[in-house]
Length: 73
Image (cartoon, rainbow, N blue to C red):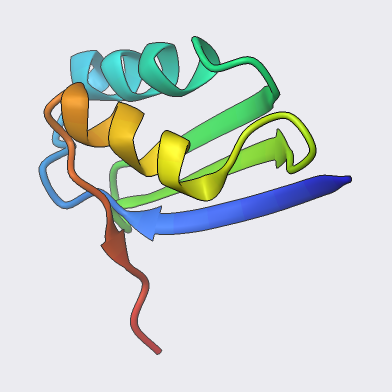
């Protein structure tokens, strides 16, 4: 089942940050797409919920140095 996780990644400030976040998430089996918006500081991860859990995605982002925060509002 395809799911989407949207989180704030306030520490993402440049293209290298985008690349690190994308690489960290895409390294997980089941992640199919990653979009990092530097203007809004939002990261959107599309994934197969049968293959990867939200906690694993959040842990991968944290381990990469970009701890995710809930999107407010």
